Image (tube, rainbow, N blue to C red; front, side, top):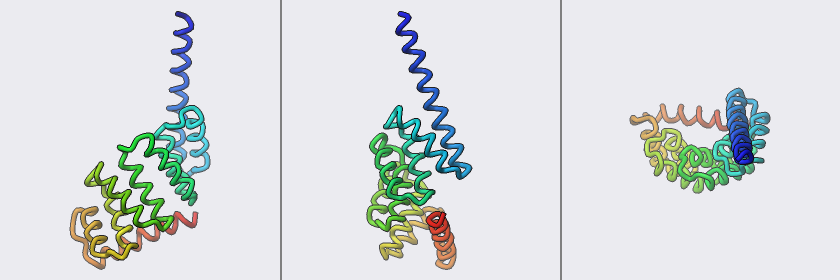
Amino acid sequence: MKRRSLAKNRASEIETYIEVQARQGLMLAETHCYSEAIACYNRVLQIRDDHFAALYGRGVALANLGQYGAALLCFDRAIAADDTQHEAWTFRAVVLIHLERYQDALANCEQALVLHPHDWEALTFRGVAFYYLGQYQRAYESYDRATGRTVKRWSLRTLWFRLLGQLSQKQST
């Protein structure tokens, strides 16, 4: 009886530790301390290698550090752990855009939209993928859906250059 109680207490301590490390990783990532966030996520993954939030957070942090190949592997593992989370599919698409794998990025955006049909980020990055694939009309339509209104061509161009600036800024940091 005492052993079961000790085992239960130990399991509870481990779950608390995992929760604290995952939250700390998120807070560090929000303050752009990506390397420190990755260290927190790594501690979680040493205990539970299929922890979705740690895999997703680690992927985001790696992508923000420009380590797109490693980020892609994290998103692959996150999706394997839980393929119902549209955010993982969307951010995986962003990484694929950085890796210039536009057709794959488009497929990931489509999967995100199956799970969450009105996700403006998935719609926006689907537009980016269409743009790079030379399918400009479909890109405009996707941007229109993302914003909820028809975007004038000059406004779209402004939106597009802002988005490209953010992407290239992330690549240079």
